[in-house]
Amino acid sequence: MEDCDDSIACDALRLDCEVCYRAVFEAVPEPVLLVDGQGWIVDANPAAAHLYHRPREAMRGQIVGSLFVDPSVLEGLFENRRGQLPAGIHLRQDGTRFFAEVSVSYIQQRGGSLAILLVRDVTAAREAVIRLEEAEERWRFALEGAGDALWDWALDSGEIKVSGSFRAIIGWPDERPLQGNEIWPERVHRDDLRMAIAAFSAHLADARPITEVEFRLRLEDGSYRWVALRGKVMQRDAGGRPLRMIGTVRDVHEHYLIEEREKRQQQELERAGRLIHVGEMASALAHELNQPLTALRNFSAVALRRLEELGAAGERIREPLKMIAEQSLRAGEIVHRVRGLARKGGLVTAPVALNEVVRDIVRFTEFEARAHAVQFVLDLAEPLPAVQADQGQLEQVLSNLVKNGIDAMRAVPGERILQILTRPGLDGMVEVAVTDRGEGLAEAVRSDPFAPFVTTKPDGVGLGLAICRTIIENHGGRLWVENSTVRGTTFCLCIPSLAG
Image 1 (tube, helix red, strand yellow):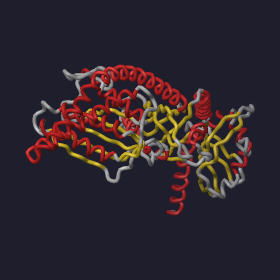
Image 2 (cartoon, helix red, strand yellow):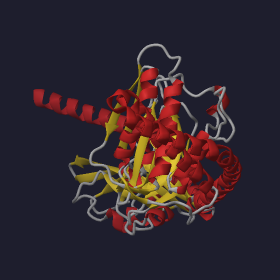
Image 3 (cartoon, helix red, strand yellow):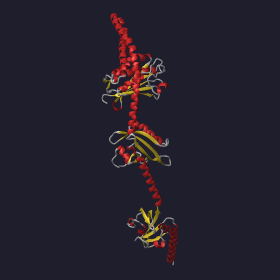
Image 4 (tube, one colour):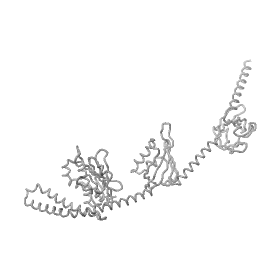
């Protein structure tokens, strides 16, 4: 009697389960197909009938492969127990097609296994992706047609995708995956690196709407080309951390070459104008100074001969008189050389040891420095490559810079230090830096301290720095000024070394 009761209870439970299953099967909004081990459709819910535009009765007993354009995706459905079928195209009864994804689960019954196929129509999503890809392709076509190369940087993984035109700029022949650091900062010229990093950092920190920067990019052959980069973060996480950045790169190297050529032409015109002023001034100076300088040399020579007659009694003033004679001779040579500045190609060059020139200038100006409580600090690189130069003209430049530094500290309280530094520079150049601890450049000369006839000295003419710059440029070098972040001014020059 108990066995019978148990059997009745089991049948009732089974009936309840079937009723529940049927209710769920009928009500679920997703299309569901029940398929047996031979591939026949056992049942289809109303959502499936609606999706495939087929009556449920017609679908029952139909081969499930008839719903697929490519029925081979169903091979091994029961043997492999796959949880997902490849996305593909499905057929409706009227012949229309749609794109669907199919998830699969399995149930075991007394009559065998059944596969439950949950069908998701993803046609709209796929079309949206296709439209997005087409729009991106048009965007790429338009930008690359305008000469822009494209890049897409996944900041979390570091991987960067670049267009063919980007690879062409750099010279990458292959399609290997790339990391962002293989391009920047790895390939950015060291002189442009700080500027490029600042531009990227400001945008990544959301301080600027986009990244815009121009820098030199190293190619595969080791050469550099100027490029203009634009980029924008397109995706951030919930905390604001940038995840994806896209942008363009444009080759602007030829544009830069044209700009540099125009700049050199402008500099040559300015130099020609300076030489006219210098030549006129030098001619007047030579005419006015030659006679008194000659007299000074003669009188100092006579004074030295008279001292010989005095013997030991004249020793105290012998050295100052010798210095007067040497410096008057040097002054005459300087006037002669300044006149020669107006005649391009008038340099008389020889190998020159810059450190020795610096030591000579310190010796010549030591008396003036002591008079104003200025101490020299020398930081001279050893060994330092020699330069091919006119030593007298280099002495004139350094003497002018040193005296300007001493003048700048005349009214400055506290320690007065004039530092002179030499070092090997970039691209085969040798650099000299003269740094004072004065009050910095006056407002009147800050915009262009090398402009002729501009000075803040009551007794100055305003030609010293202009002449110095012309001398250095005639040597193939450069003279520039840097304001100290603390106090004072640094004048820097560089000229080619013999080894350069």
